[in-house]
Figure 1 (cartoon, helix red, strand yellow):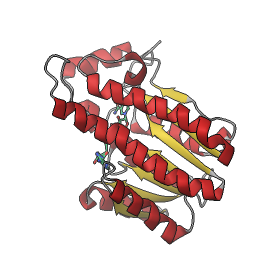
Figure 2 (spheres, helix red, strand yellow):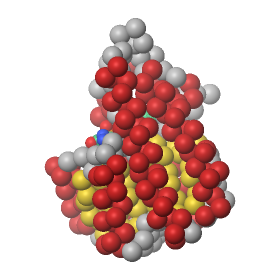
Figure 3 (cartoon, protein in one colour):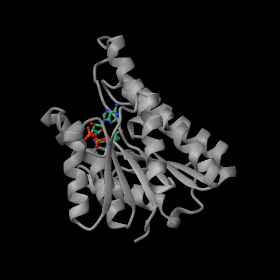
Length: 246
Ligand code: NAI
C-alpha cells in the first residue's frame, strides 16, 4: 500500500500501459482518476478497479485541449481536495518514413505526446505548488533516446518529453515536486501489436530478456517512482526495456 489515499490522475488509462498503471496504483491504495478520450474505454476500467476494492472515478479528457485539461484538474481537486500524482501516459503513434510523413501526421503526434504532456504538467504543477508536494511522471520511450525507423514524429515527441521532464525537475524541485519519466522498450499493447509480425519478432530477439514487455512491467516502474521509495529521485528517465538498448 505504498500509495495509500494518494490522489492520482492517469491519462490514457483506458488501455494498455495506462490501464495497467491504474490497476497497480489502485492495488497500492491510490484513489485513481481514469482519464481518457472516451467513456466507452473509461467505464470498464473504473468498474473493474472498484469491483476489486479500489476507489476510482473516470473523467473524459482530450489532453490536446487545454480547456479539457483545466476541467480535469479542477474537478479532481474539487472532489478530493488534493492532487498528489499525475501520470502523463496518453500517447499515440502515426508512423511513416521521413520521405513520406505528412505534416498532419507530424502535428498529430506532437499535439498529443508533447502539447498534451505540457497541458497536464502545467495545470498539475499549479496545484502541486500550492500544496508544496507532488509527483509528475511522464511517458517517454527508448525511441526518445535512440530514434526508430519510421518514427520521426514519435522520436521527436519523446525527446521533447525527456526535455520537459528534466526542465520541470529543475524548476519544480523547490516546491517539493518530483518529476521523472519512464522509458519503456517494446511493450505488448495495442500500439505495438499493430506492427508487422516480423518487426515484433525482431524486437523480442533484440531484448536481452528475450520477450516483449508487459504493461505491468511498466506500471511497476511508475508505482516505484510515484511512491516514497523514490523520495530522492527526480529528473531521471527510468528505462523499462528488458535491456533492448544495451
Ligand atoms: P495505447 O494505445 O494502448 O493507449 C494509449 C491511450 O491513450 C488510449 O487509451 C488512448 O485512448 C489514449 N489517448 C490517446 N490520445 C489521447 C488524448 N488526446 N487524450 C487523452 N487520451 C488519449 O498505448 P500504450 O502502448 O499503452 O502506450 C502508453 C504510453 O506509453 C504512450 O505515451 C506511449 O508512447 C508510451 N510507450 C509505449 C510503448 C509500447 O511499447 N507500448 C513503448 C514506449 C512508450
